[in-house]
Image (cartoon, rainbow, N blue to C red; front, side, top):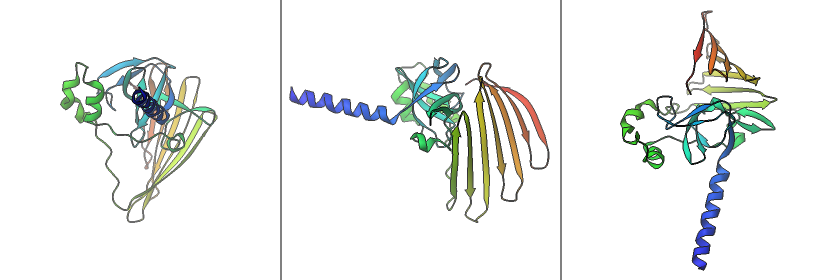
Length: 229
């Protein structure tokens, strides 16, 4: 009897540690929960707008996150979930992730086997696997510095990458969300001083974005994209 009680207590403490490792998040729009970090992976279930999920971790570039929703487990694009940071709802980005204690996780066949063995498409791992390519590690001698902040529904961040030869490139991001519309601007400046900018305005209602790009020599592109998360 004592041994059984000790086992239950150990399992309870272990479960508590797992729960503490996850971050409570909210889905900002109706969203597909997918079996892998790409829109090419099959849909596990559909998450409702304003649904609450637990974020277990994100890829190294924070583009996709591994989340739990009830008994379901899967992946969502990071831009469609928010967490509370300093009293404000924010999207998980490289700038704020360290402060949120969001861990970096990887997607693998072991993950696929653990959570999807009962699904009809489980045996098609070889078909879906090529759609996921983990980001390559930076060259030896490369340093990456990140900084950022979020307040009152707006976020900004800067990433500077310095190569082994001492040359550096900087990427600056800023964005804000209000009334169901999110706006963001990204500017990349290379070691020679040339820069490229992308501005994007996205609506959570129709899942579409207006995108404008401008290159270092004055060229520009404007268009509208519709996403199927």
